[in-house]
Length: 168
Ligand SMILES: [Cu+2]
Image (tube, rainbow, N blue to C red):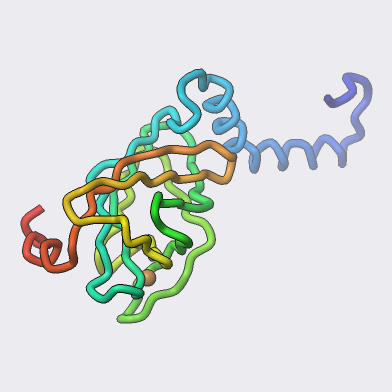
């Protein structure tokens, strides 16, 4: 990519700076190159305790909660989240009693990020009437690099989730 011939000093300096900033991206690319599995799994990434909370009142938004674990060596960025049976989703952060939409979430290496009540959550608009408590729906996370990761969400009615809210 870079001609092996002469590189003037200022140009070399720029390259050095770029490569520092590019470390993270390079690590992600390596991970991606190693991917040979199903398109909807991402090496090192896993989702647990996926839950979808039906709205208490039909027509209101529901919410999804889960844990995402990044065992890879790079930061991954969540660009969007789709849920089967849901028309539209937004990633929200609850702060001081109000919620604000977030465009992109970075999950740093070796951490588990929680989507939970009162914190980060997926707001689900246009909830399809076919989603029933006790059943399961599927969530698909799309990362900024285009990779996807699917995981089941256990569907719960809001009352049930509240009863069990502190127990899990
Ligand atoms: Cu919200």
